[in-house]
Image 1 (cartoon, rainbow, N blue to C red):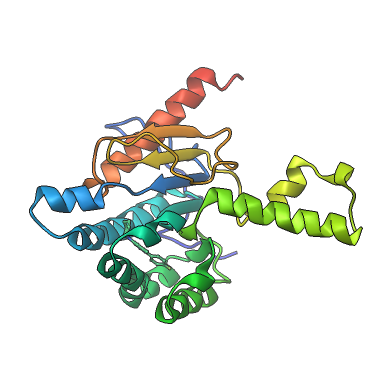
Image 2 (cartoon, protein in one colour):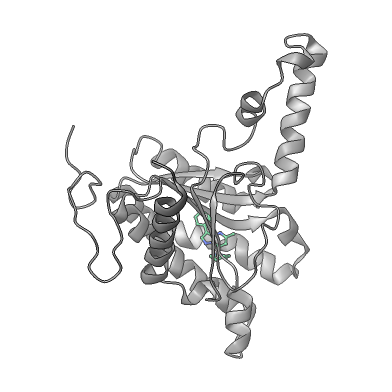
Length: 255
Ligand code: V07
């Protein structure tokens, strides 16, 4: 197999001198609630959409860093099922961000061997948004580096009800019986069925809630919160989250 230098996660690395981050024990799946974009803009007397735009640049920065560190899956909460309630101009702007992002950044994602995936019901997004995402998913489908997983029109309760409906249909058809329903089967009906569960959840901007994000999948994950608004979040904050994660594991992880 070719070595994908300089983005290989197999190169032997030492401990980060300033922080003590252990590059050999990077969490495999990191999930992020990228909160505080609107408040960041408001504090600067700017419209909320300016915060979203700045937040998008931070996504690029963190994707680069996660891929350099050898994170296997990065799940980003980009748009929730509740976000449709926002003003129309804001929703319209948000729906242009995937197009904008991929228009400038898809070549680098391909270069970095990143695979783009989504969770949530993308069929309800505008056609131009769906088209850009579908194109990126297709063009990166054979990549085997970082899985960049965008949660778009995602809601965890909806996801679970959807799973229950599918299982109930199988019971009705008689292909399975109620006794056959297990945690593993339920998990296999979620959007995340092919992914590992997150090791670490990061939420920015001081809120300490799950807001309908991956309720089932986060059952055993470590949570890390920061007051920093998403547009101010950078590589050093990301590394601090990973460092704290590693130290929690060292303290409570058993042998
Ligand atoms: C969005 C920027 C980040 C802060 C949080 C909300 C605003 C990147 C994407 C994206 C999505 C799919 C894709 C490529 C890029 C995105 C939305 C909002 C809706 F294939 N950032 N970003 N999508 N924000």
